[in-house]
Length: 375
Image (cartoon, rainbow, N blue to C red; front, side):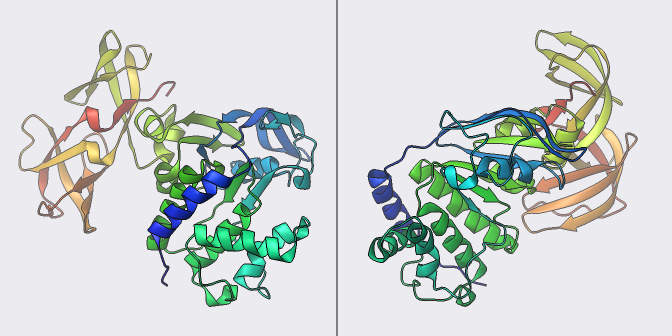
């Protein structure tokens, strides 16, 4: 599968569109919103705020409530309780047609019998624009997403990445206050996902769009978001920047869900100001205690914060390599240790340590070791 990527054209068009846009980016606010289906709460007392011109991702496993939350922003589902505001206006009881939002669906939902141009021009035409004006608006937005010259093609004649761009252009053509994405990259292969997510992020920043973005892919969320709202069991588990969530998880669920983490037990033996000294088996590490008192603690240790050296333990923990996988830019290890099996990632061109090799294990707390509050 191939995809054109004329970035200079996209940047130029974005500059033009930003200068001529008639609407300002709007905020989105949920106040104690609940959605029930019978006796089941799909979303339970959720409150958050999306600032104008930012991209906020709703992230979580299947069934956590993220897509229902997105559909309530769109007006495709109505809140059972609470209030929803877009641009400061209470839209809680307004239909989808009365909300100034557009959604890019997981399936793209392109009309197969229409050309690319007709697909993008459909929205303005339905809203009463003349055919000439609707097509002019469509041509502008197709240029914005790098699809100039493909206006007459059918969706079936496009690659997956190009179809995704048509869906984005169709959502942008109405210049909505808020743009919504529901798992937009799930139908693309890995390399295309990375390239298209970069395009979406560049477009959002260039046009100063307010975007709510749903995904279950942690890497995708970390790559595109100004802020991430992690959901679990219909509630918000934690909200923060990608760095905050990765380096300061609020609980075991977030620590395990945002990237890979080794969950280890330790003892917080002393504190000094905001920092604490934690004993992990025979090793000591100094790190922020995050308000946790002395005694038994749980820690999230990122795979790349663990160092392996061949040979006797020395000052580190003794361990043995169980499995090793070469992945080009990195080597992944499973290591047997006195504190349990560890998942370790080492980057760079170091020679791979073979299974069965004794190793010495140390930690680099500044690179990804965090005490988990409340664990």
